[in-house]
Picture 1 (spheres, rainbow, N blue to C red):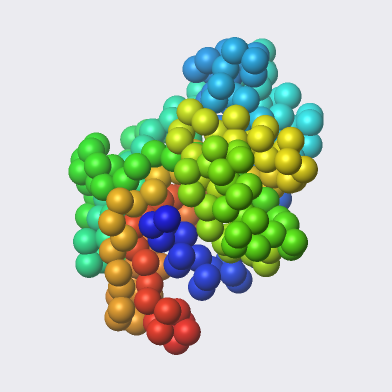
Picture 2 (tube, rainbow, N blue to C red):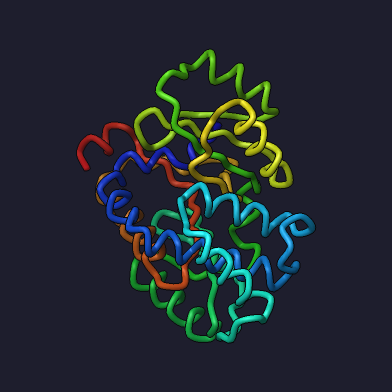
Length: 250
């Protein structure tokens, strides 16, 4: 598959830090609240909520947190109204960035994002200025030390996954499917005895932007991480792919 996460080999230190459960749970909580607000609090009739809950469970999010997020979305608990909004922009060397936000103040968030892009060699884009370069997909992750390339391919075919690749962590596998097939893929993997550790909708670049300059690589990574660390951020997707020789230097 296209290298939508190849660059993450250099991100292992940050990934370890980001594995602070608070941040992970906060993002799942936002997604569950949004899904419940838009489609109701019953996961059986709300596919997006079902995906969000299954993803949260895979990340070991406590049941009470999940239920609280659902009630907040349905209005059973008081709280500021959270809106979902997707921003687009260009980073250094024309790299494409998509940032999914959950915010209670779109004016503040838009202003902050515009500043982040402009101060880090990028340009804040208009809706549709970047997203046409990506395909919407679903992603399931799981750990299996016994799986090799051949058996992973066989499993992917059995589960009707479109593509697969090795993940960021040791013995991790990433299975990719169409955006509406994510719950089915998760259930198929579970039926095959796999413990899904993460699932979500993603943007996959159609054509990766290759970076073979270490200074540009640093600038692109800096912008990505600032966007990813922003409080309202749920997901950041980009099309950059850093050459192996540059990764080794970084």
